[in-house]
Length: 531
Image (cartoon, rainbow, N blue to C red; front, side, top):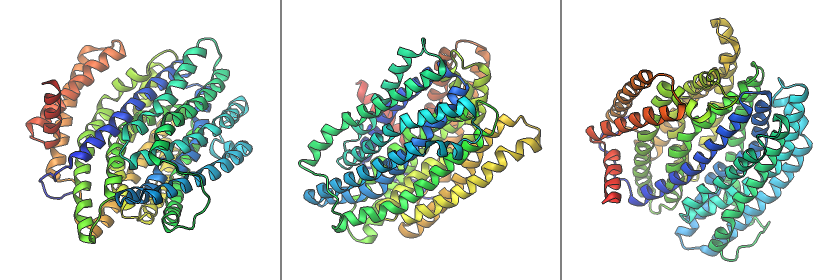
């Protein structure tokens, strides 16, 4: 990961757009954490929790197949390129064709999914039986239409991002989370767990409709007279469809990997599926806040780069290296925090009602396993976006397939035979799933970086920069860990505010002492905001 030790100049617009994306994601993720905390209060690691978390994965397969990742790779580069060339009429035609394609395919898949739900449950959760299995089937059938609406929300996001309207598209999920929170607050204290899970699924569908409704008026205003069309003859539309296919397959392969994880978790003792989902909610927070925010802000800008091949490569190199530094500055301390202070974080978010201290330690162990690949997966997002800006969707696909194959093999070994060989309780096999995914993420990241460097020149993070980040994070974590154990057992939220506040403050102070440009930029912005 070595390039020049000097930080490349960061375009001011890229910083601002990344902050807008991060702010929107932050609000939606905070709402998601509130939702998960209330969910944990009423469900804990029970069978109903396992059923809901497993059911939630199946319609999400549809959303992730056709959602933001696929559209970012296929639709945004073409649409943003047309906007950069001031061809708004063609841009509207492309947007209408993509909307029509999504509406048609998702409608058919929702119908098939609802009818085939029992077979899907047998395939991805063979460890569920009796009432637990029946509840999962009912939940999936309720949730599927909501997933179809969220696919359309991803189309809205693609249009908004291409027009640099980042904040609205990433805050819209707040309404979806709010609908589920309201459902839990209203019915949680008076319904048993199984009927509450069904009511919550309906609340999710209502939230999906609200999320689309929040974005749609602005999107229609930006498009100014677009219409649905099934005419795919234009070259730009064919380009979107051609790029769509490999990314669709790639996302499908990745989602299959997620289902394999759920399948393996369902074979472990009760609570493993829910615990894995709780840990993933926390693990994906820095991925979304920092990896997704920078990648989402950079993709339209990269896609709009014009000029000769060498000029475009130079622009991509500058933006890529700047984005990598931004991501690492925030993600690396997240890795250290999850590893050393994960019990503080998990307790503050989830410890309530049926979610006990034993559950806290269980989820922390799974979360610690996820730190193996956290940095690689976030940096890999930006590398993938750079490929998409080059209209190359096939190279990331090949590496994604390899990652999934490796994750599947290692996941099976780490989750089932390895705990038995080491004499570890079988339920800890779920931590092996997150570790195996992390190892595979590093393999994929290395391949993405090496192949891209051949095309646009050297990219990556300077070794001195990484060493400074590690030193700052580890020093801050050591002090925060000492304070945590000196305070002793207290109420989780005040402890988290104290311990994590010390950690974050010391990390930032150490980064300033190391004279890191990222820390100095944040400090300058904060000082200007106050003055």
